[in-house]
Length: 327
Length: 252
Image 1 (cartoon, rainbow over the protein chains, first blue to last red):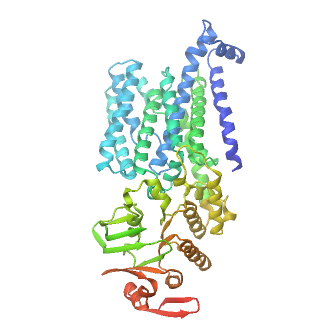
Image 2 (image 1 turned 90 degrees about the horizontal axis):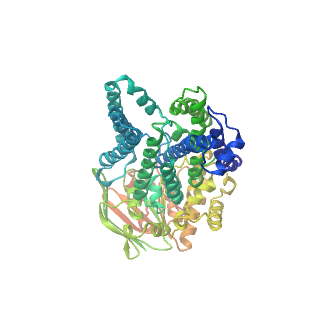
Image 3 (image 1 turned 120 degrees about the vertical axis):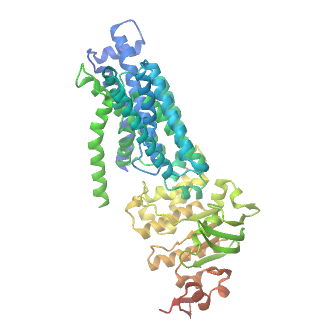
């Protein structure tokens, strides 16, 4: 109870702090006063301004949007599938996006077309899942989950095939894309817009999400329109995952560990969990991407590898805590 | 108020019960008895509009129960399901407040009256001291009482309860059936599925027996006899008249 009250103020501080840290970190040294000056003055024709406005800020905002979208999709899917291990890619959205993006890369397309391929692939996989997984208009979380997992395996096979057929020089870009990479993210506004819209829609139904988490029958008996809500959740979560994967490739673990971590801190009701997840997921990915840019500079690491490196021990720790609490 | 007409209850591959008609009126306290698999839970789902019966109709007032708007239906019919919210994320009080969902509106925040109703409900089941304990740390019987509190906070006119006495010790079983009786005396409609024959002759005024060869419904003093229960459970029964009312016990 006590610690959960502190979570929100801490997150509200963490978000701008992580962005500032990201603005300050990089190969060119920028002191904080120059950063503030460049931010307040708006885009101008100076080196500091260029670095802030052209290079670092777009990437940081992309990272924030991407992390927020992943965490948000994680929360929504965990309610929809009533499975604490559900994560943004569990229904195969990232697989479809990977096939689309890699196909575009194999054809030698530029960043714009690769993003288009990723988003198109993600939406196509959602449509395919809807057609196969929702038989006769009946929602069935188990069936949806199983169909999604099977489809994801199929996409994995296609991705392997594409990788093995690709000549060596394009391979590196593909592997980076698959590991999650924000170095090509330059236009954060669309992702930020989707993030805010989905957060607003989900918060509007936060009370219904609390009830749906108790089970479909229970939610129905309390007057929740269960089927429309589940359909909406599926579409919103898919949109989040598609936007995130388009922005940064398949960045793992954010959507899984951020909601769990917040629940462990006592943030439970969905009204707070949704907003807290966006702030925490966004800040986490900003920090992870800043590390990815700087630890091995001038070499850039794929941020997805870092989130996994940070995420795996965190998740194992959470699971052992839970086992201890249950035992 | 809640009327079932010629219901057929079925689960995939099996018909459980045919020709069931019931009139549930305000102030009545019904018990539903039957062997395992007789269709008690299926009946409860049909009466509450959660699942359509295989045949027949359920009317809530003048309208079919499944045609009633969801929230309005949830304000009039409350159901105690057989689910166990062991994995619930919050405290007992937070769980009970969810029972207020049908009284809340999309964007409005939690009102003080919702929390007050939840606290009153917890007091009615003597769980007010556990209000701020995580639900997952409570015992099975304590969770059962919190589940009933959530139903009380929902404040429906019609209470449909699936095994409300499960997990409860004897004293709390007594408190629970008294509470159900009290709800009926206040003009609510109560229908409870149970197996505890010690209580049914004393606190329930109507009974529905789901026999293998068809249902029998009516006033408790006519429907509930040692012979009818023997036929129902295929188990020898004895009836004792005590100063607190009639008590049925198995003769095994």
